[in-house]
Each structure stands twice: as structure tokens, then as C-alpha cells.
Image 1 (tube, rainbow, N blue to C red):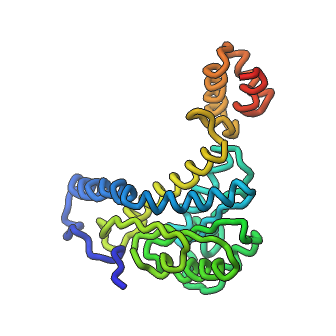
Image 2: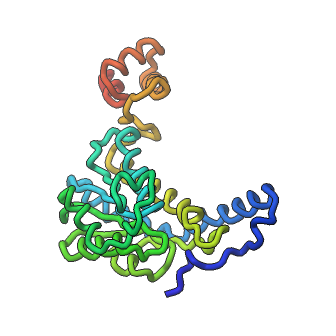
Image 3: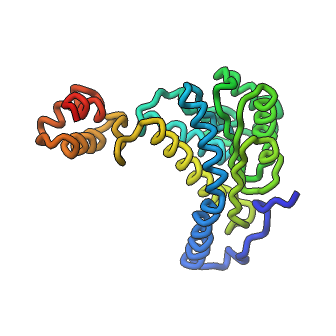
Length: 268
């Protein structure tokens, strides 16, 4: 199988470039990412539609990956509770090597062929859930074996990869194959592939949370009020929705604990 993620960069003699030339080349390549994601939009829609059917019945969304891919999955999952006010276990990110691997490389963690399923079972993943594998190359044994095990146990699966026809894409029920082409720095899939993954994960969780009722209009009415900036944002949202003045809106927001509850308490 030809790995697009391993193709030689379109640029050479990088060490001889000025900062301006390096940055220009990186930016030129990054501009291709959004277009590649657009090409995969139908696949993304199929994936979120399937995940939605399970989540609206109480199922969970799992991301599982290794290295950069795993870190991006954990990042997206960890941002759902503060952004949308959902329980921490509703969207779960799992990375090969465990939480230690978020900051430090764990040698050969992605090569394990049983640990992915074992890690999923720590959360008692079942056929009500939806599991998304993330791997730029689409070959990480940790992820591929986890998806195969999910299939064997009747758990629906999807994936995000940059290599069409990869083992992971073949294992997933609903693959998303986003072809970003060779990286500016040959093989460095934390660059364009990682950017594409971040964009797609944002699309997955944001669209799901909107359809699951966690957004009102275009506002994050269930966001956690975890700092002063968010209290100020929430106060403005209450003011906009109800017409009350700032001091009263802020007091009501703090009393009710969320923008949604504050607005609903006034019958709006």
C-alpha cells in the first residue's frame, strides 16, 4: 500500500531556506487542508449521523489513537464538558500509552495489538457506543486491532485517516479518508494530517452537540462558567436573550449556574 503520508515533500533543501521561505511553504501547504476536508464531507456526515443515532439513546463517543492522533482525540473529548456542559464520560479520548503519552512519547505503544481493546474495556464500551479510530497512516496496530475487536463485539466504528484504503479504513464501518498530500516536512503527519484531524474532530463533536440540543441559536448556553471571561460571556448572552440589564443578568447567571437555566427562569 502506498502511504501518501510518507510521500516525499514537494520542497527540498529546507535547511537552506530563510524563515520567510519556510513559513511561506508551510502556509501554502496548509491552505490545501480545508479543501481536502471538504472533499471528505460526505464521509464525515455519514459518520456523525451514525454516531448521533447512538448518542441520542445514551451511547457514548470514543476516540482512540496513538501519538499526535491520540493527543488530538483526547483534546477534542476534553473540551466537550466545558464547551457544552456534557458529562466527562459522554465523549472519551483514549491514547496509546495512557495519559503519560500526552506529554511524553511511549515507545512502541502504537504497535500493541490487544491494548486498544483492553483500554476501551476500561470504560466498558458496548454496542450502544460509537468508536472512532484516528491514525494519519491508517496502519497503527493499536488502533486497527481495537476497531476489529469492536466490530467483533457489535460496536459501530468510524475512523479518520489520510491514507485511502488503509488497514484502519478497511476495518472501520464508516471511514473518513482526507487526502492532504505529502507533508512540507516529509513524513511529519503532525502537520497537514494533524490539522485535518483537528478540523474533522471539531466538526464531529460540534455538529453532534448542536443536534443533541446543547446549543441554542448560535450560543453555547450549557458552557461551564469556569472563569471570569466565561461569566462575562454568559452574562452578555443572558442580556441579549432576555433584555435584562447587566447587573441583574450576572446575578441571575451565577444563581442559576448556566446560561440556559438563567434564560429559562425568565420564561424566555
